[in-house]
Amino acid sequence: MKTADLCTFKQDYYDYQSKKTETFPCDVEPVEGKELCLFHDESYLKEHPENKDKVIKKLQERIKNSEENKTPLKCIGYYLPDIPLNKAEFTQPIL
Image (tube, rainbow, N blue to C red; front, top):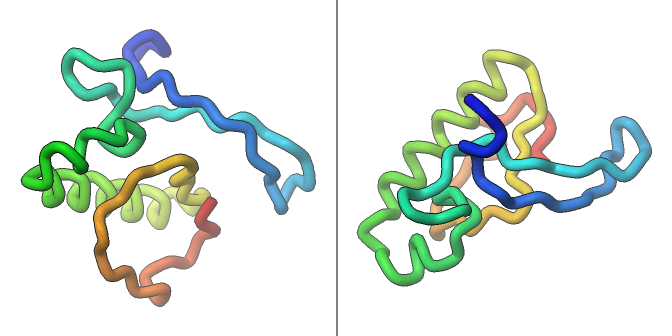
């Protein structure tokens, strides 16, 4: 997938593992007709609460991928619905 086909959200953050400031580029496809993905588009859930299950499912996929690949789960700038998360589910850092 080309970078142009991805969410345009970018944010600097301090990475405590590397001890330096990094830039987080989102690697999720944007919502159809928009530049931001379902995690970074503030109106995606606010204006359409029925999208909650879709966001939760996509987040669960990202959690599973993080665990399988033993990589940090980067949720920088995400707008998430009110969902319970069990910290025991996470064995990788969450940023």
